[in-house]
Image (cartoon, chains in turn brown, yellow):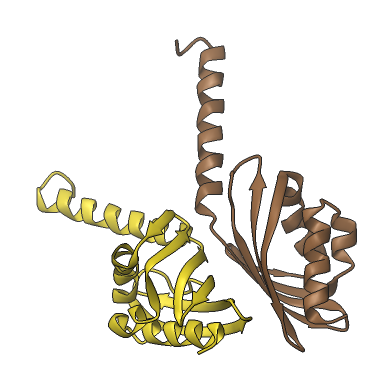
Length: 133
Length: 133
């Protein structure tokens, strides 16, 4: 498989919520530079992806390119938190597996949605405790 | 020029802080879907890019791919606000100019840096007004 084929097969798997299959394309010693920092190893990478895959409602692949060693995918995601959360992944592939990934996406709408949800929960708790109308 | 050549020439121009040259690769009726929303027209696009180019200290192109109609660039930026602010742009090119751009980057560190700067300014103002030690 070419790097492009690996990247798109990986993408197809996780956007189908099949993280087991997705991880077959991820090297044990993967290094991923994500917005929040570096993730090292397949176990940590899976732990990073799992909550996102869990809340995924849909996705659309916009672009996929590759050469002998690398590939890039650009896509949109729809999650329970954010209606449109575009992402780009630039990966290095060796022996059919992703060994390095540079992950680009905008954390801001996710942070805002989480903050709004926490505020709603706090308001509901205050109301339940009788300290707010 | 191929879409890839246009995208990389555009990229090289704006990361050299030459926005005039960069705009020669941008169609008058460009549509750009950026993290904060849609930008329409070259004037609005320039107004969107100018503050970023202004604070740009350096950049590194990680990847550039293209086909007959599209190109994608993935890169890092260093600005006065954020030490590392990776971005990805997936563009449509017609007649040597970018007609559509999908811009992906993480706004969170920029928002955090602006918030921290505002807090520092407010603290300095309070101190200057004698209402804080």
